[in-house]
Length: 250
Ligand SMILES: Nc1ncnc2c1ncn2[C@@H]1O[C@H](COP(=O)(O)OP(=O)(O)OP(=O)(O)O)[C@@H](O)[C@H]1O
Image 1 (cartoon, rainbow, N blue to C red):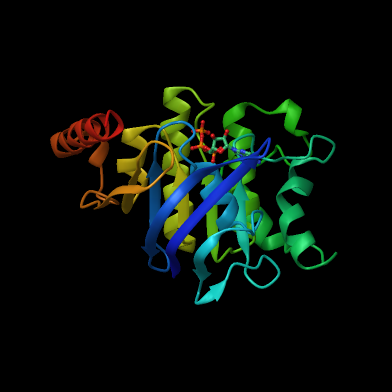
Image 2: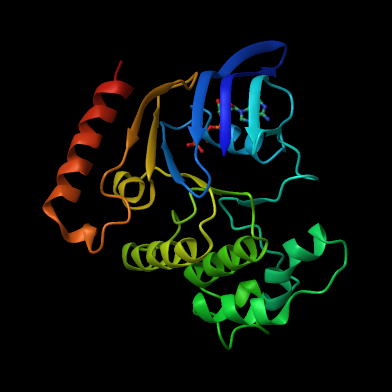
């Protein structure tokens, strides 16, 4: 369970302070997915960094499983926009990196590693380096690393934005397949309405800066088989687009 109550944060730049997130209240049940949509600069990445424990100075409370965010106590998987792979480590080493850091030099569970490699379609690529993979393959490696950790919370910052439309859909399906098996609480930031409707059990619309929660939608279409090609999917995307347009033009 993730609980965010009365979260406020300001940045200070050249002695001028400005609010970035204002009065954010949000709850996410264990194993739920939540998609966050908001205009550029409204504080989405800042929110993820707070949840990841990277930013620690803010007002309000942010709890993971009832405890304040603390990466030493909770397992938090964070996939940044550039996937965060180390170019000098091969794919198997990159996937195991998170678990090795977490468990302080313990080796990786080979069975779990090969299970995830297979599930994510990375078989045969283990010895290659990130620079030798396509964007979609690198994205899968980042997902494998995050899922191997069995995180209490998985955070993804515009995870599929660099992929072409077809690869994006394929990786979204791969994500859902792995998520179904591991049911990890996940928060993802996206600029794509379709992605939010496809991947978010909950959809949160943030206003322009300073970001406030404009709307939280309990997505009735999340997880429905073959939903991408159904009329009600297009309809919900259309409605969401209209809401966002009205909200962001305020
Ligand atoms: N370390 C920092 N110091 C000062 N200001 C910052 C810092 N990081 C981000 N900002 C500012 O805070 C605001 C929110 O940034 P953030 O990256 O969280 O937005 P975002 O919604 O993720 O944007 P985008 O969609 O463009 O990635 C922006 O105005 C940004 O310039």
